[in-house]
Length: 366
Image (cartoon, rainbow, N blue to C red; front, top):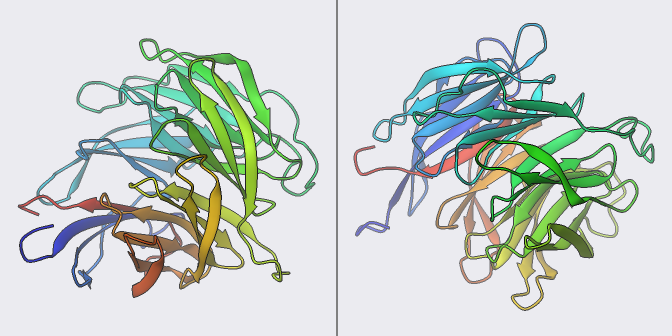
């Protein structure tokens, strides 16, 4: 924080539609207190709904759906002073519309999955962040859906992909098969091969969606889209084994409506965990037990809109921004550093069908 007690940020919003008002938005803001600048559409792309930045924050990768329905990924150079994005290049993915992107820990490889056809794609990256040629590997997850939820689990549906902290393994959440797949990862070649313990099965009908890693690298938390739970796993990178320990509910016991969960994040302090409910339209806040990694619910709070698809925490964890897709708004929350609890601050309206938000500390010259 600067001497005045005010932090400056740049936010990016990815939207999931097409047309003149959809693409990637940029917004300047400050906090201490919160003051929002005017959002600006800086790039029009079809369904640019998921964004991923590198550690230096000078590169941004965004999904796009091409005119023929194919999955695409675009690489952008990010100016650290202005926050402007310059397109470097783009490539077609191995499957249909991409739903999730990640970088491996060396940032030499871009990892993507497509939901509809459960295809995993690995893209090689050049030193300048460009995507080198076509994808280096692409394959479809083998197997049928679990069928527990016939409307959502009729077939495999890859929903997210992550490199573990050791960068020796990659996880893929498959909502349709109720599985989290584990692949051995070769950071030199980008190759993924099934690990000896190649997957862990969730409770039938859970529908694992996204993961979050604890700072110790030994605990993993999966938010299950279909049954409204978060499962805590023990992870051993020495043997490549993921083991389920316990699960907690994201919904109050008296809720009877339709709901699906979405995003999950661990606070930078590794003391708190956050998950979003779509239907109940809330954020659930948990205290992480520092001894065993178990979760204790400490708060449920309205997301301030409809269908909180994605949210982001600032680098220091003092600010949280949630994208409410169906109400076309972004809602900002203060994060209590002692308790982890959220307090709503301000709402930004008019970001159409926003499905991803990224919140970055601005440079001195921004």
